[in-house]
Length: 490
Image (tube, rainbow, N blue to C red; front, side, top):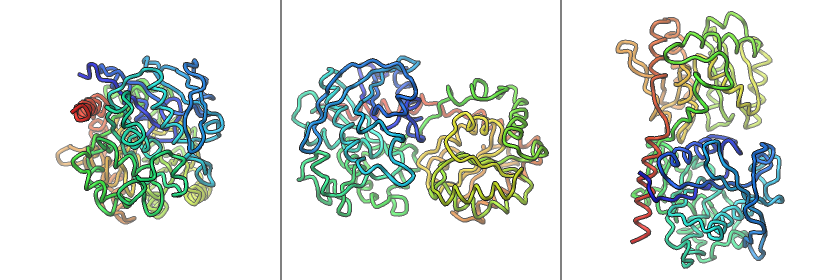
C-alpha cells in the first residue's frame, strides 16, 4: 500500500522539532507511519529559534532560495535533517521571519507579520520542491498557516508543469483559528486580486488563509469523524459552515492516532517506575511520586487525583472547571493542573492553588516531562471542552490507566464510551450539555466509582486495552491521497 506515492507534508509545527500543541504531534507521528507503509513522504516546516535550540543535526541543502513576497523577493536557505526513523525533514530558514522566541506570537498577541511569515513558508516549500526535483503527487497542508498552498497551486502555479498536476489535502485541526488579515495585504500573499471576493479568499472584508485551504484543496480532512459533522453547523462552524456544507462531498473525518512510541507507560522515558496492562501495580508508585513532587497531601495516595493537562482557554472548558473547582474539592480529591493560555484562567487557577495548598497543584507553562508524570500518577483526566476537533490526551490517558472524564464533542465523543458498571463495558465518563451542573455530576459519578477498587480496575484495564495507534488512520490517508491523485490526473 502506498507504492510510488509521494507526499510533501507541510505544517507550521512538527514534533520533536517545534511544538505548541496537538498539530505538532500529528505532524510528527503521521508521516513516520506513512513512511513505514511505503509512502515517499518528506516533511517541511520553518526553521524557528525553537528548532535551532533543539540542537538537531542539520545540513544546508540550498542557499539563497528566491521567494517572491509582495513586490519584493526574499532569499532564504533550506536545511535538511532526519528523524530517528530516517524521515527527511526540511527546514526553511529566514532569520528575520522565524528566529523569534515563540512560533506565532507573544502573550500580548500574534506577531503582526504572520501573513508575511507563512506566505513565505508556503511559497518557499513549493519552489524548493521544484528546484530540488522532489516530484510529489500530493501536498498535505495543515491549518491556516499553510492554507495558501492549495490556492497557489490553483492560481499562481496552475500552468507550471512541475506543479500543475499536484493534488492537495488540507487538514483542519481547529476551525477556530482562521488566519485573518487586512484586505490591503492581499498583494503580500501573492494570490491574484481576482480571488478576493466572498466566493474566494474574502471573509467579512478580510483575507482568510483558512478559507483559502477550504476552497482550493482537492480534499479537506478533519481530525475526527464527529468534528467533520459538527463544523458543518452554525454552532461549531465559526462562519465557515456554509462553505463546508458545499464541500461536504470532499470533506473527510479521519481520527488522529496516538503516538505510543512517546506515550506508553511501559517505555515512557519520563516516568519511573514503568507499568503496563499486564502489571499495573507500579501506577500506584507513580501516583505516590506525583504526590511528593507536587507537595500534595500524603493521604491523597489513597484518594482520587484528578488532572487537567491542557491549554488554559475557554475552548477547553476552563470556565466550567473554575465554576466547579471548590465543589470538586469537597469530594475529598486532589487536583493537578498543567497548562498555559488565557491570562484570566492562569490567574484564577494559581489563586486556587494558593488558597488550597496540598489539595490543588497548579503549574503554569508547557512541561513535557511533567505532563507524562501527571498522566502516569493521576487517576482521572478532565477534558470538558466546549468543542474538541480530536483530542489526543484522552487517548494517552487510556493507555496510562488514567480514566478520561470528557464532554461529548468531536473526537472526545468518538473515542470515549461511558462506563457501565453492570456490564463492565466502557472506558470513561461523558457528559453532554455544556453546563457546570452536568460536569460536576459526572465527576461525582467517577469519584463514587473509584471507591470500588475492583470495578475501577476493570475500567482502567478497558482503557489500557484500547488501540488508537496511527496505522489504521494512516491507511485511510493513503486511500485519500490516491483518490485525489487520480482526480488531478484525469
